[in-house]
Amino acid sequence: MSDGGGYSDDAAMLFIEGARKAGVAACVPAHKLSSMPNLIHIKACDEERTHQAAG
Amino acid sequence: MTAQLVDARTGGQVWSNRYDRPATDLFKVQSDVTEKIAATLTGYEGAVAEAERSIIRRKPPTDLTAYESYLLGMAAKHGGAGGGVTKEGLDEAERLFRKAIAIDPQLARAFVGLAYVYEYRLEFGLGTPADNQAKHMEAARNAVRLDPNDGETPLVLGHAFAYHGMSDQALEQFARAEALAPNNADLLILIAWYIPQFGQYDRAVELAEKALQLNPNYPYWYNQELRYVYFFGRRFDKSVKYAKRVTDPFAMHYAYLAAASAMIDDMAGAKAAAAEVLRLDRIGVSRNI
Image (cartoon, rainbow over all chains, first blue to last red; front, side, top):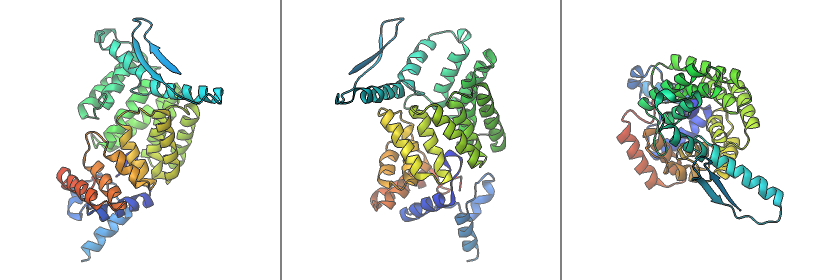
């Protein structure tokens, strides 16, 4: 979602809200992270992955 | 009022348009029409640039001037009318911009073009990010150094600062670009595309709408910027409208369309767009989050 090079936290949250409502996975799954070293992390997705890992 | 642009060399008509306005305030009408004509003619794919390119393409490559190489580089960069950015197009654009610089090392616009090549490589994940970022910044700084009074040069430097997360510097350059070229619709939409990341959602919408007003017959690539600007400006209906007009959409376009559709409770539209996301990108919404 980083058109233009980046995004603010609230912009990221707005996109995630819409994507989730549409049924689209908004964050890259934890097991895919290692294959994407240049990934730009956003707080909400890191928190989601941490939450999922904790079960 | 009817305006015509004629190629003096051939007598052929390059462009014409008719403007109907109430004649209540002639100075305002004159100013309004002049701004629209300038915006329509002078864009990256405006009638002037396209007319020049059609002549240049008939010349042998060895006879091209620096500016002609730059013009062809810009066309290669964005893939031409209705086209799209490709790796091959960016490679060709870089070759043409470097050729332009070899002929005329003072041609600031060639460095502007080079900055776009590295910016697009960053955007599309081509090459090494650190290398692209460094070259992006170097080209943009060279452009400003060579011609600080061309609005295009602070625009690309603003983009480069944005990619480095330097928001104050980016916004300063965007303000300078807008001050230098307030009626350049392409420039305004490219500022609008960047500033949502700095929380300037309403300002982005304002600039985008000014660009649309200046250039109602805008080129295809505005749609990508518009769906993004309107999404973060929370005008989801307009985001959907322009997302549907994006040519050659990839997974991210459909992700925005799905999200915007869901936000206006068009769940059928959201579902259809979400299916396209999954079809085009099995890893999820984006490689960038």
